Image (cartoon, rainbow, N blue to C red; front, side, top):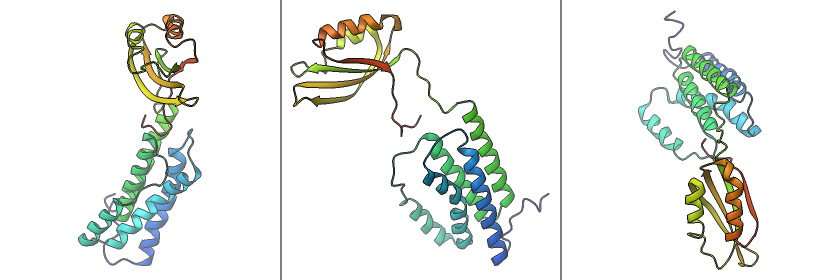
Length: 227
């Protein structure tokens, strides 16, 4: 049993050992990709990157082969790597770290440890997806308010008394001028004190904004937000 969990990099690197580590990294990387993205959606390029990341990381550490100076250089190079795309979700960032840790284990020659970690982590991710633990579910009190007001109203304070009356909390997330600057379109994320008072809240807002457009719906989160 101890031999099974020992490192395969016990001496001078040979082609057989290198291809063994690379093969295990690729196989478990593909397996981890399927397990991690079970029941979820992401870009195809992200799938490919996740599948190949353990192999890439393991190859780097195999070639370093215990050289401390080279290890420091590679660590510095990793800090320069950035994904030229939108910020990922918390789940996607977690998957990237799992793939890198598995690749590190393979690069050190601990194939059994790396494979076990990848399988256990992938199974945990599948379970979280199955139980929908990644989904942030707003309550019925959480709403997004979009309201249009004339340009002569001070949007920073004009609704303060109504917000104090009907909401437990509010946050102005966007203020945008429209129609050649004649109106402002405001977006708030807020929490109602009593959902049954929603119509009364809208009626009082209509009086305050001159009966311009008002929309009060389910709270919205950005796609790239860490949920």
